[in-house]
Image (cartoon, rainbow, N blue to C red; front, side, top):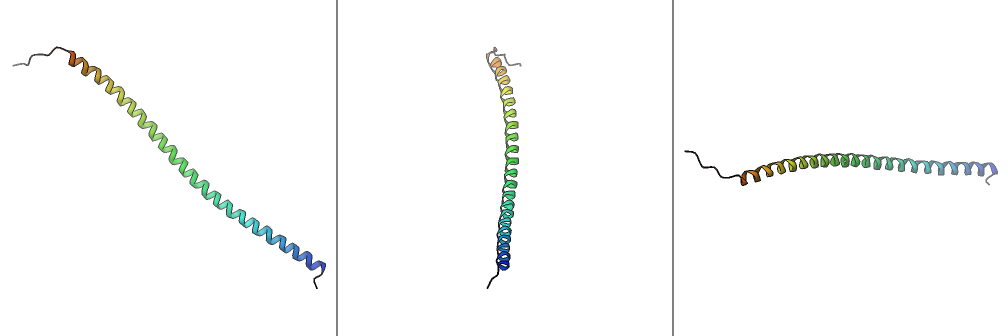
Length: 88
């Protein structure tokens, strides 16, 4: 027959097993969350890099458009000018 001492010991062992298994599961989740967070950080860095590249490309395109506008004005001016006779 089990005595009260045996029952107490069995309960304590049961509680210890449940606590150990519970903590082990937490550690597993912590590792999974750490892995997910690491991947999210990597994706965030890539997105930020892409955003910076897009901003740089946008600035370059705006500068190119300004230059084209300047050239277009000069071309129109030359087209309106009277034709010159060829030399020789």
